[in-house]
Image 1 (cartoon, rainbow, N blue to C red):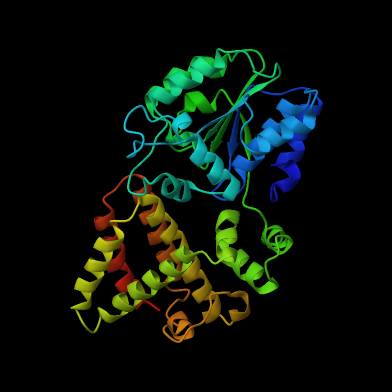
Image 2: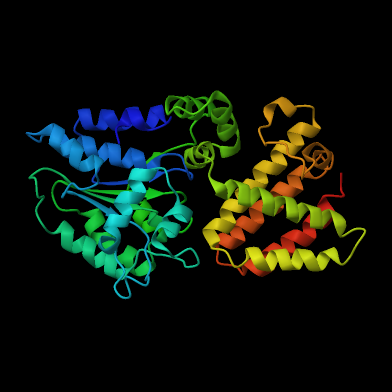
Length: 375
């Protein structure tokens, strides 16, 4: 991953390049950006420049980092016990999965990572065993004699033990040792870590940058535009949609069933039982998948609102005979769109905070039955 490969965020890239040129590299840094913004690819690109800058065989250095196999580039990420790893779950035990995951899509998110290692229904973490591994590796000299870099992806998944254990080494790291924390949010990251880091703020790529990248990869103009519009600035989602990811279709079918049942409650109270059943079904899925579904719903309602305001040319959802999108859009107006989005955001926040998903989706569904008829 090179700086030129990272989508958007030109100012952040320029700032990092300047720090390298001026040899003013902060030893503890935080790359903060929303899902799909490219925070992890940018961290890798930065580590690549730092590690390879003084190596005799630069090409070989780049190759090893491209394969995520450089001995001085260490990756840390949330993990959990699995059927294959039954104790002491640390990143090193999942390194082959990580390399395959990163090769497939370096913009991938937690949902995709959990699926890769088979823990869709668990909550992974970066815990005390991982912290001990980091400290042990940091105490060793760099293998190639230059810089040693630790990239801690989804650092907000560190528990309090790991955070407190790492505080001293983050504040006073060994010579030529770099810690790059990659986060989507600082809400669950202790202030003691944040205060010790130089922060690089990232933003979602602009639609034109996402579309241009997809076109460059060989996707058609229609698929690139559609995927870009549906992605909400998340390049990982855009790439999945362009590839024809079935998860999108599953979300679409689940959404359509949901709103049909919500509409019917007003005239048929038995549909309420169907909503409760729907809520129980989605509550059995993994939390990251539930959060992704809520993001999808937000975009679906947004596009319906655009259609209702004669901006149908800006929408990209495929129309099909099983669901009358235009008719549905008539119910999404200025009178309810803000409340609908607010309720979706609240549900997302509660899911992220480990709330009971069955209760959360049941409550959201009942509120939707009222909001859809507030047009």
